[in-house]
Image (cartoon, rainbow, N blue to C red; front, side, top):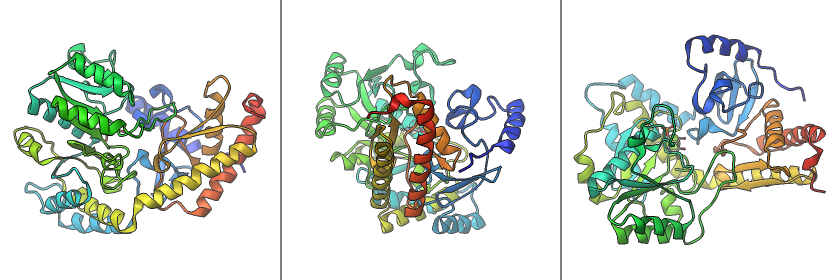
Length: 421
Ligand SMILES: Cc1ncc(COP(=O)(O)O)c(C=O)c1O
């Protein structure tokens, strides 16, 4: 199979770099923005449908990045798009808000166990920030515990020390714990008795470049109990994992009830909105806050979210994605095994992480393997966890395995050291 060429993508990138910092920034970035190596990835998309994206050079990709989470029912899902279009005809960004906002809140409360109310914003970072503010306002305490190497967005409070433009004062009330280390967390909390407003954590540790870590069976139950004993609010950041582990919330998946759950990404199948949901006693606390944005009450995303939530429930989207993820990761594992190499598969199948192992743990063969796959139409990130959507077919999976096999044979020519037999 011939490797794709990205001629038009590169021409557009040259244009973009002159007028936009880094050309493309953030997690979609290449080159100066550090994340993706130049040459492996398409840089500009032309269109998307179902589980596919087409780049500006006409190359088609089976997209296992799913827009880094939002694509859960397939790009351009007919039900979601029809709901969005119907709302667009009535109005989107209007001086007076549409009642579809109430419908969206009611739908979330029906779906998510810890949701007695819903507050809407745009990005995941808007609601993780609000959750931390609510915990502080509710307790009158300053400190927030977060996990080492966590990601909760780009607002100052959750940036790592040394980030350009972030003052030490802005992060001086952060305490850092190791995910899944209950005793360490307990010791940290005891050392700051009466000072901690909240703990914010992803439901499991999907950390870039490394294997993902699921919690021990009783971890979350013990953390919940500790929070109750110490008067600390438990915030689960479900922006990434939400609606892919359990529609009722990832806290529900692990058998607990969070005080606040941060939702985004998959909530409206790609339409731009996020939500903070939480338990009844925190509603008056949120009512005290001054927190909003020009586009936060736009109606189209609410209509899209209602359609997304209803369809996800009706078709058991989580069950479908877990099945697809299991078949996908098992097939990739077999491809690696039949080529005498070792693939580590971590996380949950619907948002899996894969790493092709090498003896030096350099990730260099892994990056080559992923790059060769991408250039043959399988879009996988080399550093991030991946996502599934309900539209991935068995033919798509078989195509993925065929490409993975060819890409691995190419990689093995340059890196025979990764053979385990
Ligand atoms: C766990 C988690 N929290 C928060 C965010 C921030 O969301 P957003 O990029 O929509 O602000 C992300 C984004 O990737 C995330 O994965």
